[in-house]
Length: 204
Image: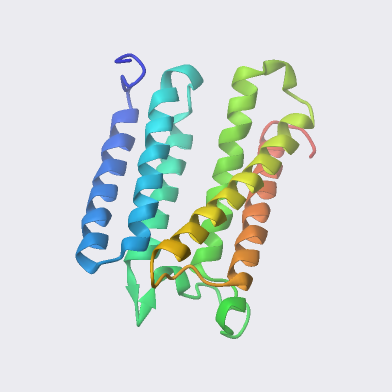
């Protein structure tokens, strides 16, 4: 067990950075009574434990670990940083459309969804390549991670649904928000696999 959690050069910095912001935002959420995001903190702790446990068996590249940690930070900031009378998740970052409630584009939330599930697809691609090297160069190793990342994005929406049912007031949004989340999850996953295909010298 000790070997599974033994950190190599560079991994300790990612671990300390991640633990620091998770602890900081957890304290902030509790002080503000934001119990919806406490659910997400628990989810993050589970994911951190899974990544930590698989470090020595999967050899995640250091940039991938930083990308995962950055996703967690963006997620925590989205729910914890106030913007006017709401939070960063609801803020329009790129004004592609007039502000129109849940149909507003592009919001911070949508960009984080695209980034996060793009990273997820990248991680799944790495796992397939690591454990099933015979798939290298095939379309399978590009298509399956994208589809699996979309599936995990749907699981994320179920977690948000659970938060809506268990916490009186949430900032999760309604049907349109959920649909847009799924669209941006898919967009991020597909783009990530296109980038991987180009980086590996293979046309998608």
